[in-house]
Image (cartoon, rainbow, N blue to C red; front, top):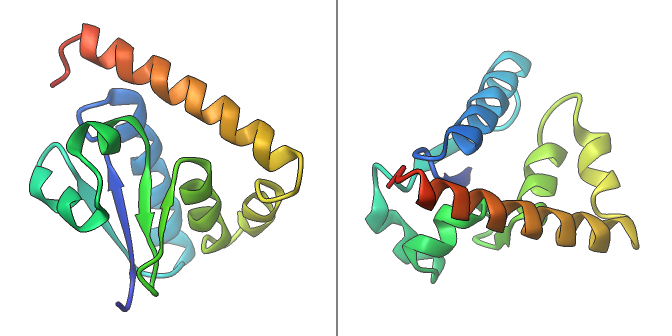
Amino acid sequence: MSQLRVFYNGACPVCNAGIESQRRRMQVEGSCPVEWIDVQQNPAAVEELGADLEQVRERLYLKDEQGQINVGVDAFSALFQRTRGQHWLGRLLRLPGLHGLARVSYNLFAHALYRWNRRQRHW
């Protein structure tokens, strides 16, 4: 595998805005190549992750160059570590103690956002 593959929920306006911002930043900065996969537009793509569509709609997934799958905070950390100007943020999210706090916070936020999107009938 030669590039990152980021799986995100484009039907979620918050998720989509965050991904678009990160995509622009990485293009301007000339960071590593990324394949951005909107699971709303390509639901069958989740099969390679060993996850179901609803799991990927709820949390960001990243498959790295070696085929390792990162989810949630770990996916963001891996993405930030490969983005010029955000290396520090990727390392920060991996610090002991802070990593656990970031993971719990992200999971709570992602779950609440997923439920909100379902109530709004975004998919």
